[in-house]
Image 1 (tube, helix red, strand yellow):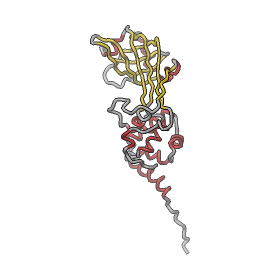
Image 2 (cartoon, one colour; image 1 turned 90 degrees about the vertical axis):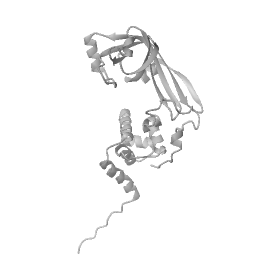
Image 3 (spheres, one colour; image 1 turned 60 degrees about the horizontal axis):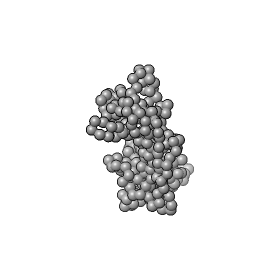
Image 4 (cartoon, helix red, strand yellow; image 1 turned 90 degrees about the horizontal axis):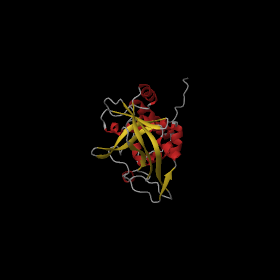
Length: 258
């Protein structure tokens, strides 16, 4: 007699776990998945840790990271933005072509001055900031990829490009972060004198410690350094019940449960 074996029943929970894996195996990750993964790795977090923070299943987070067709509602995305400590619009990529700060003010904002140590911490080791200087036509501010080396702000630019005109002049350098979803953010302002690095050995040393090449194309072999004379900063945070709220476009979309 042939032995009869029971066939396991595929529960709804099993389907929710297995379906994302099956779909992710068929499709490459989309922009949302790449942003999720990049930010998670930047924070040094595992999928499970992020899922716990966001109150969702680890398998669902894996689905969002690996499946290009994933289209979660605003609810899961808001929780993920909080878990990953980034603005909602940065996670969704909806603000790529919009200026920062299009969200509404928080109900009870609190303005604080930052200490020099807090400013240096926010300035970090690298990023994109704006250098402000005077040129023949008047003051201008342009973005540059910067690296902090030995306490100085260092960046590369092209010969005769606007940043190169800062040589020998006092300048301002500003970095900031705006969270449209929660109506808060911070800014750090550095003031000092800019100089061109001409010593080949020093240029080589800076190149070895540079985090990233400039995003802009073309030959950018002019090394500039800003020696901070003064560093100040400010932060606006939301306080009080009900201050955390999604942007208008998120509130108008139906929420999709995780």
